[in-house]
Amino acid sequence: MIEIRKSREKDLPELARMYKSVFRLHNVFSRREKDVMDYLKKMHTKFAIIVASHDDEIAGGCVVVVKSETKEHKLSQIKHVAVVKEYQGKGVGKELMKKAEDIIARGKVEVHVAESEDFAVDFYKKLGYEIEGGLKSHYRKGETCFILGKVLE
Image 1 (cartoon, rainbow, N blue to C red):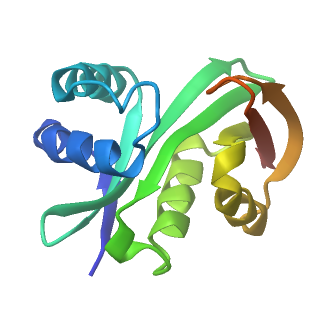
Image 2: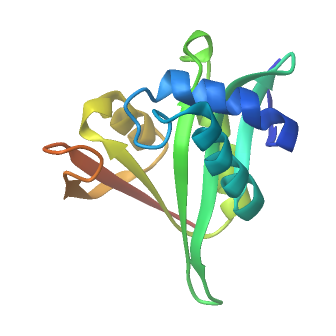
Image 3: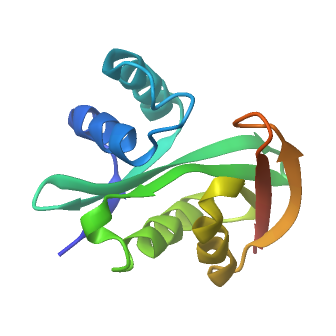
């Protein structure tokens, strides 16, 4: 059974290895493992990292970032949604997103998707996200980064 929960500090080394294997071209996760660990420690301290685990092995993860919040408006971003290959297509990504949205609870949520990851655009659309725009050469030169958004009530 897959458990979806907030990360623990002891999860970070395995989470770093998972991200390095899933996001081979990512500007953070393609760096040395120590650099990835430093980044994840910062994310773990400052924001919420959600993990999917099976028998104490990391099957996936994502980061919830609250960018701004007032009484009237909240803007959040869900970053680095990743699922290990053997768990893809089994609802793990959907459960990670559900947990992330539960933590966010209200307001505008954004996800960014590289053009080369077009399969992810379809995934987010099935969860109610809509393409709101794009950023040229955001991640890699010549590649568009799609911005998808959803409002949680």
